[in-house]
Length: 218
Length: 406
Image (cartoon, rainbow over all chains, first blue to last red):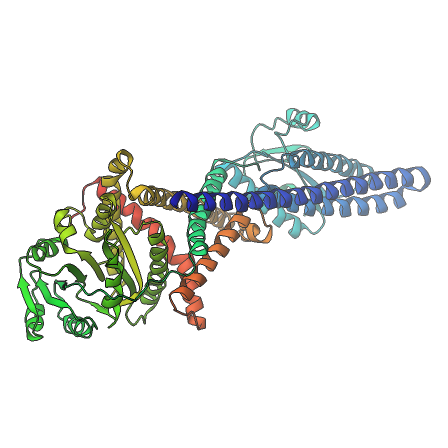
């Protein structure tokens, strides 16, 4: 009798547990599909923005080009940044999808492209906004992760206070992306969190809002 | 983030938690109608023994309740005054019952063994001095002794007049225990004969050498000893006994600590015996061992996550103040707002727990009627049961440092 009861309970447990695992994996898969679609849409938006710039450069005058390009760039930067928060949250809860990492790499490359575009526009259009690359580790744990969270929060705070005059590009240093390796080598970035302010001032460690705002046009 | 060590431990914990719950649900589904045949009534002689230590507030009520038992063959009612410093003995004598006085030696097993040598009834009914059996409880419980293999019968113990929160929470707990114990009867695995009211064949207890004076919970130990020696223990669901309980948190904590120390002592004592000989304990020992183990694991996971979050909040809070930023927020609701494998299993465990509670209440004819009852249930499932592993850890510590005297 005991063995029969235990066997039956074990079978039910295995079935319910398997259903739970399946639902968990399905939810992870759904989230991954959502992330993938978002990244694809962002890529489309990015290509669209680049083509607009090319169009204006080819067929319009400088002032029309700058006005339009700066507006498009700013809008795209905000969109990419906000999607990033969702990406982080989904990545945190997913447990079965290693493919999320690939999407994160694509997302990181989007940020790099956006940064390069922002710098180009700043020079070409004499714009007075500031650009900061925020270098972080994707695999950070413990105190390093907490420092990164703190720095993120400070930067978000600064973005809101500077009302459109500050663009921040979070870039992971340890996802094996060659262009990022090139940047960190050029600027001597060797720890996280680190900041690169306006392409000429590298800062290592957590920086307070005062330090950041002294270096930018806010 | 892929599955880490803590995640895997949680999944294993969830698996075994579900397994234990489903064991009980299967027992319930397999044996929905468990009734005993009350035809051909038996009425062996019964000696009712009431060990008492400083119970002057309740002893008269207990004796009155025993006097109202509808049973024709009560041989004797004996109060063992276990060295009371109040008027327990005098009050009991004034009620006309036999009172034996002895010096207190610390544990309840001593007065029980003391009186065991002197009683004449075929059945020894042990009743706590703050327990109040229903009038038909003894008659109903005795019928389970029709089976000659049955050496002990336990009763349904409920809380008398629960008023405060801690009393109501214990009331929920006792109700769940009653039904769980009844189902364990089906696989001859009743692991305790509660002191509130339990019946024993006198000759069997004498043959086994009486109650264990070294164990803090003689009611658990004697149950395991009976099972180990091939005897059966039954549970008379129909026999209701209302008992006094700790009414303050500190007293409650001390009681539970004693139960856990006794439970651990008994488990450690029978673990080697269980592996050497096939006995009725072959469910009880692994069940208890796994329960202890998984309680601790579950609590450690919970503590790890909670303390981690607390540390993060303190860390971020400090930086918010120093850095002059707005409060740094963490999305602690994400496991609920963004369902994942952990919230799925958390939900499954919660649903099965609620189903189990509903079944237990229905089968014991108790009700959850009001908003207060439902709120009590929420507190029971969220806060009350999280105290159990803490007490268990303290019990483990006490055993390790050998501080188990009471």
